[in-house]
Image (cartoon, rainbow, N blue to C red; front, side, top):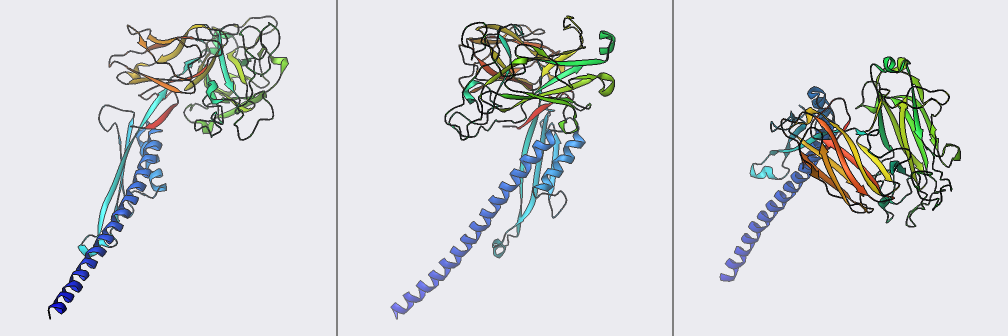
Length: 459
């Protein structure tokens, strides 16, 4: 009799255990599903916040785009209990921040036996819009045709660690370069309202110095290396670890001129004016060239911002070049730099030292609208015989010491702008060595409708 009673108890306990086990398994399944839904919600919030921030300071447009991206990612506002909330300046201190919060009731599949039917799952993200500072191409201290420094771009098959983080397709070890940008670099050509009055003509001619990737052997020394006087290019072989070797080491550079159509932040409506490419071409070596179609009338498009895009499509060498714009000239008439135009690198600028030395780089004007925010200066590969970098502003007292970036590395300097900042021109005194190629970027954490920028999730 005792044995039977004991056996019955085991059956009861086993039954209770199985019920409890099934309940736990059911809850674990439901909780796992909710975690999956939470990850989906976070993805939708992240993408919506980034999309919305790109439209700031237009709050109405930012919300509309955020709602569109939320719907694309499974969170249509007002449908099946979905709620999408948006807010500009969520903490009252960052007008360039855009908050998106998405939520939706998610069902319990097995929890209903315990009276659990659904739970609202939400996720939030904040994205920040940073305005790019136009880095002054004409204000590069010692930069010039016959000087220690010029603009430069590498071919897509060059070493990443040579200093061009965006043109190279591969890292040195053969892995894809996550920063590779086939769109290259943009330079804004600013034509003022009074251009015709200054120059007596409506015509603007855009010129490129040494647009090719050919080096003369003149001047002595190694013809593969730039010296700033008889050659500004560097002929380089590709890394042996590349998955696909280029057909030539000489870089082909494509120059494309656009009218920004009055919307410099929106590239989709830019009007093509002309395009030309240069590769191994001795006829344009160390010469100012006005490409066919690169002369236009302000009456046709209007004053304002034009865009010169520079990108490479072949080769592993470095193409050194410079840009200028002004009225067309005849005969031996010299170029007048005071013609009213201005050229700035939009967001980022690639430079190369032809000789060792110290340059005062006029980075650009940071307006009063940046007051109370942060100024970011990013530098890539400032390593070849680099000694120091120091920043100054013509309207602020003192200076700020920067940090140099190692080989193939980025380094960021952050400067807090005072609340009473009235705007000013920033310079960087940079001392480096021959063949030092680097990329510089400059942004501030406020919004300026007149300039493009970048967006990122707030960390």
